[in-house]
Length: 91
Figure 1 (tube, rainbow, N blue to C red):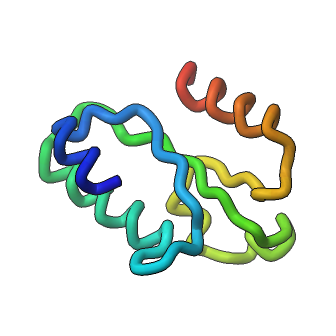
Figure 2: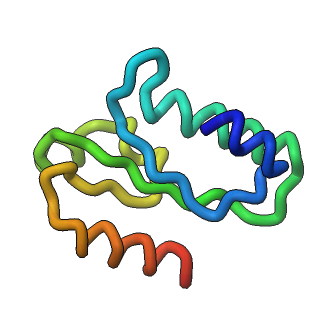
């Protein structure tokens, strides 16, 4: 994700990231991308969706998820993901 962001000079509209990944979790990735966006003085903020395997009740109490615009449970409906993507890209 970082290599793609850098190759595109930050011109990325949407990040969809798992919260738990080997090597770097979703929060660390979002933090690095936020710093890169600020360093490039981009006029808009990257929209973001966190994917998580944890239930909504757990995720809402986890402060890490608030770095993202939205979050979706992995076991959720694919249509829900598409709805959220549309909302973020249109707004």
